[in-house]
Amino acid sequence: MNLIIGRKPVLEALNSDEEISKVYILFGQEGGIVNAIRVAAKKKGIKISQVPFEKFRQITQSKIAQGVAAVKSSQKFYTLQEIIKSAFSRINTSDSKPVISNESSSEKSEFNVGHKISPSGRNDNPLKLEDKNKSFPLLLILDSIQDTHNVGAILRSADCSGVDGVIITKHNSAPINETVVKTSAGASEHVKIAQINNLAQTIDELKQNGFWIVGSYLEGAKDYTKVDYKIPIALIVGNEEKGIRKLTADKCDYLVRIPMKGKIQSLNVSVATGILLFEILRQRSL
Image (cartoon, rainbow, N blue to C red; front, side):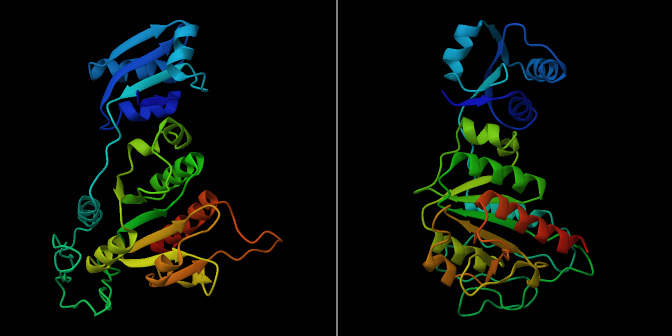
C-alpha cells in the first residue's frame, strides 16, 4: 500500500492531481487542517474512514502520521521530454522561444534563433531573455541520493524555489515513499519527477534541448555565486558521501562549490541544494 502520512502532506495531495483512493483519520482528530482534509476529500468523492488507534497504527506501521493517512494509487513519474516541454512552456515570448526536440539523444536539435548546437552537443550561444522575460527553465538532477529524508527535504526546496522538474537516477537512489512525501511537506505531490536509467545520456539530451549543466562539486569548482544563471539550467547534486560521479562532473558546463569557513568541508546535500537553488532564484530576480 502506497501511503501518504501527515496532515499537511495529505492535504497537499488532495489539492493536487494525485490519485487518492482513500483517506484514514484517527478517531477524535479535529482542527482546521483535518476539517480541510475532510472537505477536500468530499469534493473529490474520496472515501474517508475514521478508525480506532490500533487499526490506524497497523495501517501506518507506527509511523508518526499526525492522525491522518491517505492511500494513493502510485507515484506518478514523467518522461524526460515531458519535463523539458513543461519547463519551456513557462516562457511565453514571441520571437525568442526555443524549439523542444523530440529527437533521440543521437540526433541534433537547435534553438529557433539561429544558434546551432556545437560538436559537444550544447548550444554555445545560450538563449537570453533578459529584455523580454526573466523566466528561465530550471531542472534539478539528483545523482544517487540515497537518504529518503534528504530527498524529501530537497523536493520541498525544489518546489519553494520554482524548479520545473526533478530528475532522479533509478539505481542507487532512494524510493519516493511515504517518508519522502512527509519530509517534503507535500511538495512531492506538486513537483514533476522523472526517473532515468542513464545520467550521461540524459545530460546529452538536456544539452541538445538548450540546457547548461551545473554540477555541485568540490575539486576545481567555482564559487557558486560567480556563475551567471540567467540561462536554462539543469543543476546536479550528488550522493551524500561521494558527491556527483567523476564522469558526470566531466560532462558539466560549470562546476560550483559553496565555500566553507569551518573545519567541516561540506554541507548536508539537502542544505547545499537549497542554497544553490535560491542563489539561482536570487540572480534571476535581479
